[in-house]
Image (cartoon, rainbow, N blue to C red; front, side, top):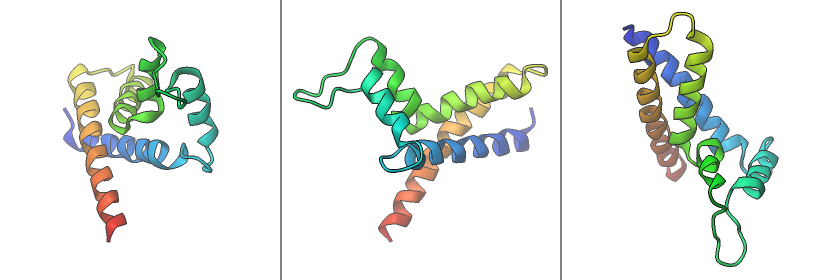
Length: 116
């Protein structure tokens, strides 16, 4: 298991997931339409009562509404895409875990920088 690879790959996943989930899909940003589309199709009803559309609403969080979920999904699928020929289960598992851990750190750091 190559720890340098795991950290580097996970950091790239976490940064790209943060940029996607916290910046690009926000209203009036380049992918704001994507969030709005998914919200209308499988997300939350924003009207009276704010009820979730079940059972397909479970897809909403990992696609656009939960940064750790986005990072985990990105790590899961990108590792499979890039390394399916040399697949290692333990390395794959670690990439997912470290990506989720790092995106939480990036989110906390970004929030602290915004308060300064």
